[in-house]
Image (cartoon, rainbow, N blue to C red):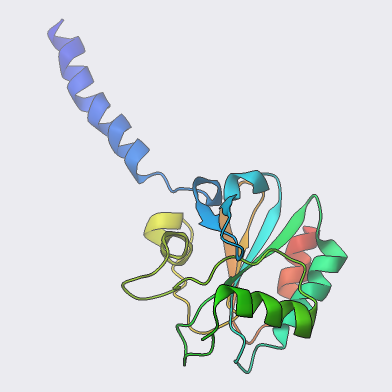
Length: 183
């Protein structure tokens, strides 16, 4: 009996610790769409997801065009792009959610899902971005957001795979090969 009790004293804390440090997945998060509706990221199970922090008044803003082309080419049952407007860099996304939505639709014909404006760094960083940017949270990599249009690649299981920086176009080989499943 003593051996059983001693063994449980050792094993139980190890099991509990392993459960608490296991990284979350994308599917553990709920966000708000740009229209203000809850969007459960668990609905994306089985899809590759490209998450991009966007801004309307940035030198990289024309990437909306390439993002939309990428979405039209590969989007559907296996791939989706999600845009998260953020005003963290040079106040380059000053608009309200309705203004941002109108800008994206009118100027770039954006049809991929856009979420409400959030913060992607600092004390008010959105929980999703805390997970995306921290290896301690996502289990894969540390990738603090350096500027607008940084792109996070998430696999079909909701795990961070890689990141493409702002200067890497959405249709670069790194992203397209990932979508297609090529190394």
